Length: 110
Image 1: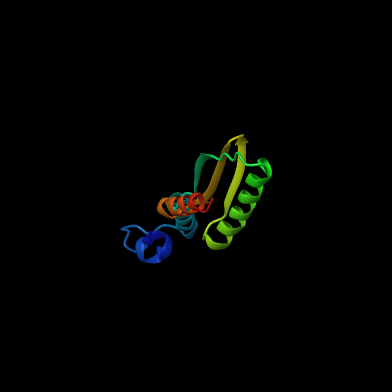
Image 2: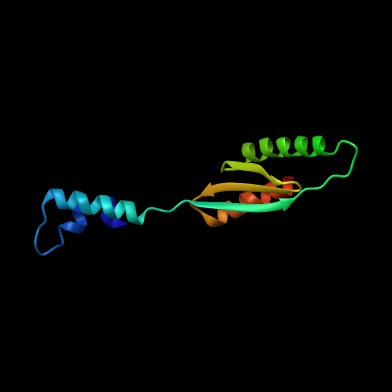
C-alpha cells in the first residue's frame, strides 16, 4: 500500500528510473487491485405470526425494524420477501465482521 500512498518514495528506489506515464499506470493498477472489495452479506429467516392481524402484523414489524436498524446501523440494510414465510436481509460492506454484527443486530431487532 505504500506504493499507492507515496509512489515517489517507492519508485525512487528502483535501479533504473521509469517514465511518469508508467509510474502513473502502475499506481493506478496498484490502487485498483489492492483496494478492499465490497462483500454482499445475506441472511435468510422465517417469520410466522398466527394472530388475527396475520400478514399486516408482519408487515408492520418489518417496516419498523427496517427503519430502526437503518437509523442505528453503520451500514444500509435491506429487507426483502423471498416467499412467505421466508425473508432475506442484506447489506454491503468491506468488513466481514461489521457486516455480521449489523445483520445479527438486525435479526435480534426483528
